[in-house]
Length: 184
Image (cartoon, rainbow, N blue to C red; front, side, top):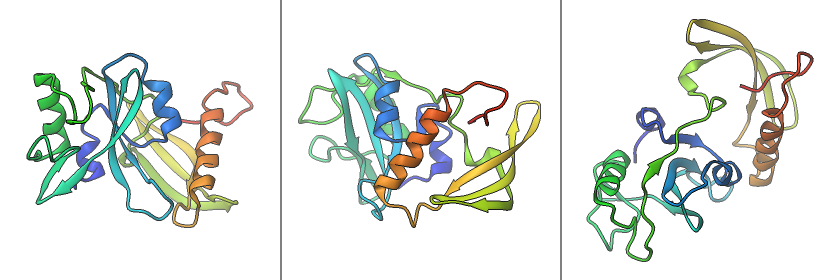
């Protein structure tokens, strides 16, 4: 399967993104994004196509014999997720044989969705229930910003704890005040 680094080149790839955030981003039929998901705590992470067709639907990408698809019954697979998306955008064919779902409009990342390559971890500042806090830098256009990085120790967290961590981040995104830490 493809790497995060390769997929990050795609503007509609969102990395590890919970369903709750996906539903908030996708509004109109045909809007879609690609994300990474962990179905159950400890499972291998998989890539998911999330798309609106009446409501938000989620399709897991599978790999067989070096090819990628959602539905190997309806196609022979693609070299990459990019090829899958490009083909379905151009052909307007359903993403799988069991549905009429068609992708039409990719949804790009939000400002708060950062590439790992833009974050430089520094010294450990402290630790909490879900992970550690580090000093760090965020690379931005025009320079870098000193930041504190809250890093979840995902290998130790249950799926419920990860949901709580992401819910905290969701709440922090709403705050805009000089005395409140900004979530990037």
